[in-house]
Every structure is written in structure tokens, then in C-alpha cells.
Amino acid sequence: MRHKLAYRKLNRTSEHRKALFKNMLNSLIKYEQITTTLPKAKELKSKIDKVITLGKKNNLQSKKNLFAELQSKFSVEKLFKTLSQRYEKRNGGYSRVIRAGFRYGDDAPMAIIELVDRDVQAKKLDIKIKTEEKAKTPIETKSKDTKKKIKAKK
Image 1: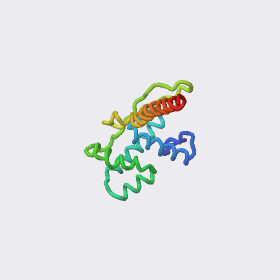
Image 2: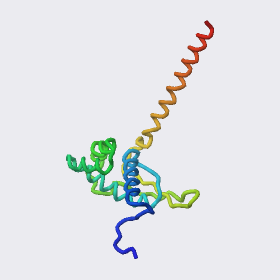
Image 3: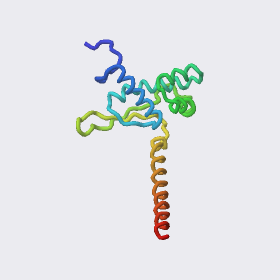
């Protein structure tokens, strides 16, 4: 019987579960919306609410506790600067879980977990960097090719 057992184990060891949720918390803070399985999303919802509540307490101790849990400077800074001001007047309920059908292959129930009042541009955070790098590399290779052709003509 599973009476009075607090959380889902997700068929993982305690260290694996801790690392999994740390990575998922960092991704959710960075992109403000992620797709995962339904049990993971339901378990992550309570964790992200606790983290944002801790971020709203703007003191050194809560900053140290957040860094100990997240181990990411970027996530802690975003929590303190952006998210704490966004949810200043909201008392809890910072995230929502939306069911997103079933995964092809193993038919696992999928869900989208997102922050309420999220920034749509946060989802495209890494995409801009990749397109800028791709745009720069062809120009550089073309200039090298023209230099080689000029040298070959001489």
C-alpha cells in the first residue's frame, strides 16, 4: 500500500531524480515553457512554485538556497530580476500543466508545463544565437575562397 507517500519516484534513484528535476527547473526558468511527460510535469509544478516563491524573498539567504538547488547563476539571476517582479502580486499558481496528447512510440501521456504570463521570446533564446553563427560562417568562407582564387591567378 502507498499510504502517506509524498511524491512520485518515476522509476529512478534519488540522485537521478534530483538531477532530473534540477535540469528541468533550469530549462523551465530559461525557456518558460517545456514539453515533458505528464507525471514529470505534475511533479515539477510544485517544485517551480516553491522556487519562484523563494525568489520573491529578495535576501541573501534565499539567493544561496536557490543556487544550492539550481546550481546555475543564470537561473538564479533571472529568478531574482525578472520572475520575482513579474509575480510580485500573485500568491502562488505560477505555472500551469497542459495535456499534449500521447508520445509516438511508447504512447506516454505528454504535457506542456509553462509559466503563467510567460515571455514568448524566451522560447527563442538559443535560436537567435544559432542563426547568427550560421549567417557569419558562409560570409567568412566566401572571403577566404576569393582570396585563394586571387592568389592562384597571380
